[in-house]
Length: 213
Ligand code: AMP
View 1 (tube, rainbow, N blue to C red):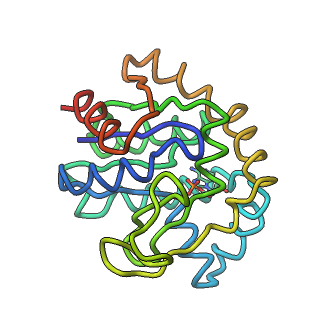
View 2 (cartoon, protein in one colour; view 1 turned 120 degrees about the vertical axis):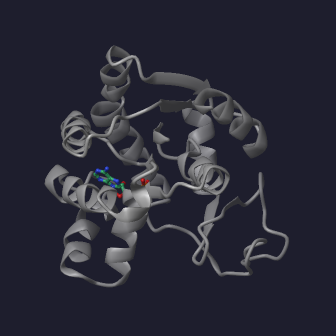
């Protein structure tokens, strides 16, 4: 399985990627998670990336492409991977094709999660994530059983600094301009499958599974 989850911020890519990696036992690769870890560790890369992330802008292609190339080449990716949040530009998609063909691998399905803008805003403003296992919650739609603690592992929940209204609006605009054109890119490659990304996490997961198996 070599899968891409495409969709705007808040469309559920991370949640679905977490479920898919458990079911299909292939690693989820989230460039957002890798970058946030680098920011947390205050590495040189993290310091550079933070400036863009705080403003809701994309981190430059050469940085994220370099991260992905290294990650895909690791041993646990030989049987596949789930990409969450990459590629986000045409250049990134082209570089991914090049990287995979150099490794003798081919991309499978590109799942495009469609959710309307109003719902995205509501989801993102109320979202929190477990620091430990990455499980996601929502203040009203999916609250944790114990406030501030993850149902799965008891880890501390946090709200991403870029999940504030001003930055969310910027991220959605960047998605439309830079990332949405990837739909046409993958449609031409006959890899794109769009699905309705509204509904319960479980409903969406069964739609995704139907498309990838
Ligand atoms: P995400 O967790 O996927 O929403 O990503 C959070 C932020 O990390 C984005 O708003 C970007 O600033 C940065 N980022 C993540 N993935 C990429 C990517 N593929 N290309 C450029 N920037 C990225």
